[in-house]
Image (cartoon, rainbow, N blue to C red; front, top):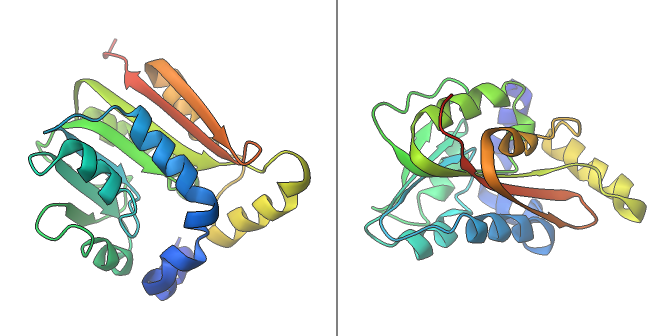
Length: 201
């Protein structure tokens, strides 16, 4: 964990360039935000928000009256994120598995390429879901090795970022939600799941 945090601290200023966001990973992020069907005034919780790449897409849908809380363990990444929407988005430096969300309630939870980095990702989702309003939506975007010729390259990308190729955190959406929608990109390397959280039993 400490080694990965040190790595993100070092690359934070140039993360958007070296992370393959625009040629590869942006597609999954855009699919998730679109499928969340965000509405004006809604509040969104972003787990592992990194440099805030989700902020523009979310703000375009929830508007100035909406809200955004991004949680990440790297203050250097959050320093970059804070420049994307000064005075609007809120960011919190914390481990997503233990973050205190207080009394806030959210209409949607978004986790893009973050949960597979965290051994206790299911605990992080438990905390996020507990802070959601009834009928909230959950979106998880994450990675697995691609099928076909891109398999080795996708594995290398996951290794470089510290992602667990066996984590498959999008399965939590299938287990916790109804009306689940699924999208894949890049021969299955990028997995997107979005659904409406089921009410507590």
